[in-house]
Length: 303
Image 1 (cartoon, rainbow, N blue to C red):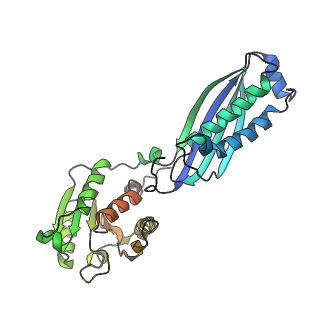
Image 2: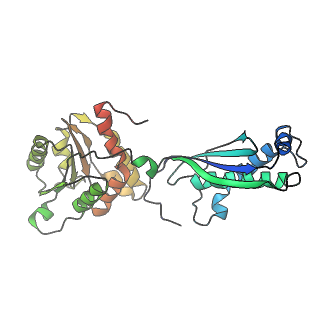
Image 3: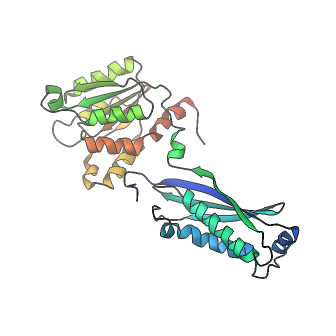
């Protein structure tokens, strides 16, 4: 199966439909009047759909087992056709569109089986995904909108040339994937005054987001959060809480990160770990959803 360990659990929804087409009004009337010889096709197919949704990962090899937290099965009769609709919800790392389609398919097969004794021309048609929400399908509403961004590497060893930066380059690459162009990049030593001056300079340039990477740990030279804390006038503690929680599910020492986040004037300040893996995990846990803060700040909200 595809590796989804890097993903975060979010609310995922999907609606799928299947059409069972009969050949006569008499069949439709038998369905409506609950006189089909094999029984009430609505109740039988509804139960089958529920089983189908729950058992999807058992019969579709690449589907992950996931917690199904809501399933609704509804029907609509249109002329000689019965439209089956299956809606599925979960809070997990991957979507439920296959579960919804599998449930609709199984429900349609049950209807076919129950109707074939009275209608030899009954058909199953148009099994399809009608709607999905959550995950990547929602990420597109969080766009950079040409925001100016900068990445600052805080490291004595990188600044002196003893080591090569990896975390900053990962962040720049990820920002470019989210639509940022011409991201500013700078390396500074672990000096509080220089870190502060760098933020002031970028604010004066109109940079809307500055990500500092490195210096968020507990060693004596880890001064990035201390240098920036007093410059943040609107703290956003939930950002770092989210990043640390994401990291702690993967490595327990993430609890030691002292990163801070918030607005300094009109500039969003984020502080990331100095390791390549830590920086990549923070990007994965926060982006692109953290960009929503700029919409909220302008008074715009996504439903």
